[in-house]
Length: 212
Image (cartoon, rainbow, N blue to C red):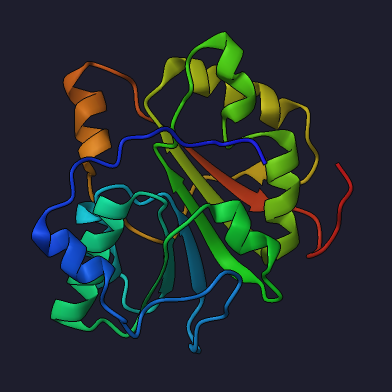
């Protein structure tokens, strides 16, 4: 498995360590289905959890599965759950592909906000968004399922444009029904004068199709 995330964990505080060791009700094992009647959104790489927590609170009719490999951000998400007990939040600490590989259920939405762009040419294969990964996502989406990708990296935008041009599983759409707050990475991109690009994609093939 090609590593698609870099090491930016940061130093863990005593509070971070406390919540990392908490046996929280929100924790899922790889591939585990949450108990919910709501539409399900898989959130891949929620970062420091600040805006993600706000999104969970603002979209109570959607059940979020937040996946984050970095301990610091994950600890903050657990802290948010333990302090507010939202009924629509579940968490997995690890690689999204590890979770997806063991899933035997479908989700309605997938969000990938500000994935690591791996800007150097020799690291292109480490970028999460690829034709193969879109095919993987198509297998876990319900019919008419939606994917949202947001990035401020011009290099990654060009890469995503190319990936989308040579696939037949998704078509672009104008909307995505889950609201989101401006995250730390979003703010950094704006402060640098970067153009934020949002890709909203609609599945155009039935679940478990592998064509494309």
